[in-house]
Amino acid sequence: MSALLSIDFSRLQGEHRFPINVASREGSSVALVGQWHSLFEVLTGEISAKADSIAVDGVDARTRVIKGQLGVLPAKFTWPEASSVSELFELSARLLGLSAEHSRVETKRVLQLFDLGYLRKQKLNRLLPVQLRKVALAHTLIGSPQFIALEEPLLGLTSHDGMDVLKAIGLARQGRSVIVSVSHAASGSLERVLVESCEEALVLEAGVLTLQGPPVQLAGQESLLVTTFLGDRDALKQALEQQGLVVRSCMLLPQQHLSGDGRPLTRAVVELPPGQSTRPLFVAAGSCNAALLELHAVNNVE
Image (cartoon, rainbow, N blue to C red; front, side, top):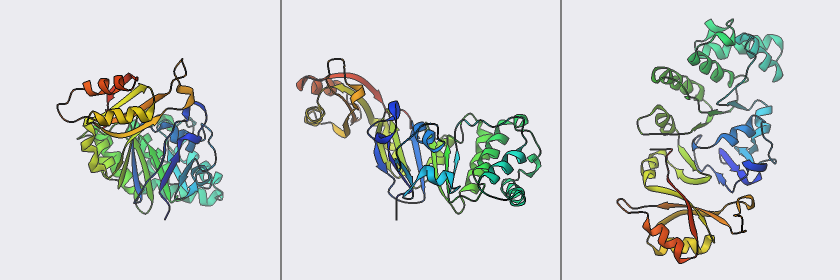
C-alpha cells in the first residue's frame, strides 16, 4: 500500500524549494502542523512542481485533482461572489464531466449532506463566515472524491462556529481519506482536536520536519529548539552531541541560502532537557568554528 501523502519539496520551484522529502507512514488520515502552504499551492496549481513531487496514494496529486479524485479546500479561496451556491456547484460538476442534469443532482446531494440545501439559491457574497466554510467543504465533495485535503479549515472562526465546522469535517471524512493542515495545534484548541483525530501528524517548523508520528507525541514538542548555524553540518552535529544534546535532525540549507562568504548554513532541531540553558549550543558552535545565527523554540504546538 502506498503512503497516503508523499512530498518532495526539493522538486518545487524557486523559493518554495527546500530539502524536505517525507512520506506518511500509516493510516488514512494525516495532519500537517506548521508551514505547509506550499503544498496547497501545488494542489491548486498556483505554483508549479515536477511530476510526482507530491503524491497521494502513489499517484501525482495534481492528476488526482484534475480527475476529481482529490477535493481541495485551500485556506483562501476566490469565487465569483455574484454567483449563487448552486450556480458554482453545478459549474464545478460540469467541469468534472457530469451532464447538466447530473450536475443538479450532485449539487443537491452534497448540500443536503451538510443540511445546506436552504442556501442553494443564496449568493456567495451574502453568506456568513461559518456558512461559507461549510459550503466550501461541501464543494470539495463534488464528484465523490476518494481523498480530500483541507488547509486551515478552522481558520478565523469563533469557537462555536469552529465546533460546527469540526462536525461537518467529520461528515466529509466518512468513507474517504483526509489530509488536514493547521498552522498551530495548541493544547486545548480546536485545531489540536482536529489533529488528534488523525492517525499521523507531520510537524514542520522553519523548514525542518520536527515530528512524524502519532499526534499524541505533540505533547513532547515543547522542549525542541530550531537552530540555524553558519558552519559545516557534520562537524556541528558531532559537536552538539558531544555537549550531551539530542539532535533530532541536522541538514544543510539549499545553495541559495549560502552566506555571503560562501560558507554553508545548517539547520538543526535540538532537544533541550528541562531546565537546561542554551549555553551548550554556543559552546558546540565555538568548538567547530561555527556561528549560531538563529534560535527559537518550536512554537506551533505550544
